[in-house]
Length: 318
Length: 266
Image (tube, rainbow over all chains, first blue to last red; front, top):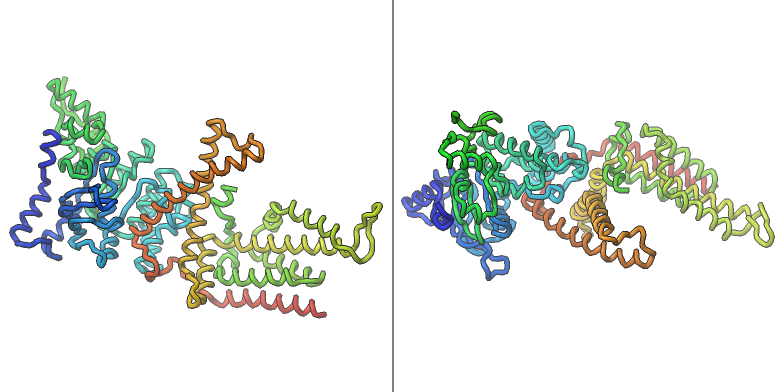
């Protein structure tokens, strides 16, 4: 499948959503309808221009189901960050509609939408508001007018879950890159959002921290409590997700499974990326007639298995 | 400097002073500062010193830490002492060398000034040793709140101060990185003459300012995405509670003020 064919490709989720809407004879999803509940994000004919004239995002329609783990990929400057900023109202759409958890994004619903969406940005240094990790975790909850007892419970609960209980009284500047990202996620999780968006959140991490990060994402996904949308250039992270949205020049170039992306040389070139080593290796083996096991290509299953399977996922005999 | 700003100056000993509402400590500090400036006699200054030492002991922080707090100002204190000795004339002549003579009034004025500065710096260190920057900021907001009707935006001021406190170390770090980058390209600030240093400062300020704006933009996005809205109601993770202890603490300072004033009139 080449890049152009992929442009025509629609995800099963989106197709199902559109069919439902057509059957109901509605223009917009009714709040509380079955589809509005199963889709966490729905974008309809979304366009946006920073200067009001030249579209930076044009005509994007897609749907992301609740509990899905989706990665958003594309070359630098293709509009990925712009698209996610539109999703929680940091930027205002020029044309089209956005629904988060069945609620249409408009000025009146901005507060409600932001309660559902948590965002973790690329540079954790610039997203800490509190002078300590604890204060930073409390910041979002204070805005939601939670009482102090509830805040304390959530802070200790999420800090221990993310392994940062010892860091609660530290200044953000005293933390390592991996610790900072964990603290940033803890601050978002404490607000208990339904959709978590990561804007290249793993790009500043070293190899070890990146592996921990991936494990954390898998853990969050397995909980089935969050819908994850992650902008990333990390092939391992893409491979681990369930679905990939490829952006090119402000449009949606493809919506497909990770293994399909890694087989599509045209799309990979469009994203300026290479598949992870194990997948390249698997493809080379395949070329030579040694068929890798299916799980070698699709690591995005909810339970990817042991580390051995992750590193050496092939069943072949010499 | 960076390390000091980074971790704040809080020395947590868990003393009763540490647990006090920061508004009480700030009010007490204001009263103390006024009295230090108003004290015009040795007995008044001695009374203030005794009171300071008592409170410092209550914080369970070693007294040498308070002395250490005055160390960065030792040159300034020496300078003030010398200027006062040279400038103020009167009383008996203590030392004479040719046309120059040190008078008792000059020496007294110098020692007064140095003592005042020492007391003020060491005692105000008590506030930062026993209170985290976040609490101090919260106290500032609490104390400004009554003036909101006069148009002083207490919450915004406190948020601005909090963010400034949070970002000072980060911006200092960035300035240091830029200086190193410039030095690696042959423009080492340390090796330049004063005129060159001044010129280089512009080359440093521009990228640091641009960086600060970039940080501000990211921070705004982070705050907005966490639902922050100016003027929207918020609860507090650590609500300020004014209890009996706070009233006694401020009461002790009021008593100290009365004693110092009484000494001044006698």
